[in-house]
Image (cartoon, chains in turn red, orange):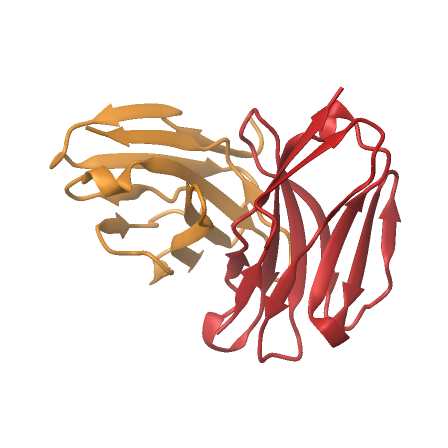
Length: 116
Length: 113
């Protein structure tokens, strides 16, 4: 079975602060894919990043960065110098073969509120 | 319009009624999915489809029926709506199985009274 845990339910920060969202996953498969999605107040789900299990390089995209560590089964997401527009629910997700046949499993989400 | 669209966006129905939520995608993606979003649970997979006429259950399939006679459409039917099915429903599609990103529709907010 596969599982994604986002232990932080809500995070509130003041604009320009950095915020890190934790994501811990469980899977028995050696090949798997990790994703982050953003859900702004308008409700749509926006894809942010995909990472496969063989690529442990960290990635930076503008103010967003991701830290993938297989040793701790974590795929954390950091927003640097947060802005009000970053206020959203952020979901971490896992896709793996095996019994779950590559179906996306989502964490419960972390609600980020950035105050001006 | 290109992309993935859901209809209706909002729906209120009564307990016991049958309701169908529509999903249409224009990319010819093989894979399509239905999720429900509830507070504290994130998104949970209801059903998915690997191709036309191929569907399979997800994590929470009870009370739902799907069909996929055409690649571009993947309707979700609540056979006899219950209050516990009040939720936001998302349809998604992806080109390949699970290892590529899924693209989501705008969601349907369903209220069962």
